[in-house]
Image (cartoon, rainbow over all chains, first blue to last red; front, side, top):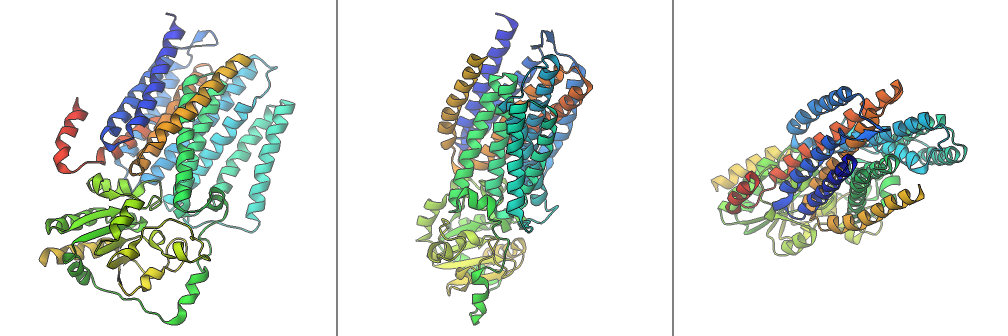
Length: 465
Length: 106
């Protein structure tokens, strides 16, 4: 067997391990092993690549390659290992971004290289797509990172004529692509690179914090597609398979997340949702209707006498880092023979499935985490719905107020439970900037304050009673 | 040339279908690891980065290739480590936990 055939065979094995990993994610039991299988497959592919011939010679600059890998690994391992679990969305965004950046660099360098040996070569579409999509993913992820890390405001950033300016930049990129394809001018490739960079930033700026789960899935898909495009440029089936798998996964997640918000993808991307906090409902509440607020002790007593409790976590729980105390509360309640489950909304948090990871970190067994439909049928017979740091995902306006911006979003029916408890920092409306009718419901009790502090006091009361 | 392109396109189309089938079966509880895991998989761009740096003739190609190798490594190493860390946390109820840890050790 020739060297090249052997290497291609190894690449085939690697591609298979990626599929095995994705299949492993079908259940939490096999997921971790699947990930390790894929990591081994990746290692195999990287090692095999060192033995490849390019342009008829073995690899040049081997030490430089090893140095690059060394630098990357020395930075990545500690960051990935020790960054707090609550910073997970940012971390995923940044690793996604660097992948997009690498894909863009690979596309552009490969083209420069081919051009230097065969000057007559025309730029082909896949090179341009690799550069465009990879760069958009890179700069877009960087902005998403800055938003999640709170280096900048998490609210949509808008300026006059934004849509028009973005449209012009996007159109300019397209015109440029056509010009390069027709004219074959390479220097324009660098202008495309710069333009794509701006486009990535401009496209992410108006997307607000709560819409980030959709955005981050989409950026993930972008990087996948950019890698697949590089695969075309380099003539590598491995890159095409891996990139396409990621592209498919990202697109699927994007669609699921938009559906979970009851909004179309274009609405999520272009409407700068949540930028005007003074939406319709906010002023209507001047009619002096009051809310019922309670102390942590009241809540503790109420919970102690319940028999079925449904906990509804939201991004506020992650902000307050209250997941461990929440688990402790659930343990204490279960010790009293009270049934506790968690109702997880698909878009709660800042990335798809964020709440599941957050609670898993606090050792909540995954059997207790219920998806929307199942949670809602459980809520019909629940004594208490405990809403911790969530707001829009339990807002009944999504069902009955046609004028509400979140109308049509599937919600967790906290209102079905016998009693509703809200742990909130303040009366401030949720991200969407809409008043929540449920707060004024007679069966609702509000407890203001930091979720973690409140929960600690509640645990003490439940233990004592 | 045309034939090679067609062969790549075949791989692309088949992967779209197979991938979508498999990924659609991932439960929503594992959506974060799915994102992070697929993130690690697109780190395969490191293979491409190694190839372009290994073929580099000019200083420009070397600089870009070197950057690509660093970014690619960040992506692949960070992606797999973060995913492993996440998946490690997903545990069943304590009774079923014991056989699971043996399984990982084998």
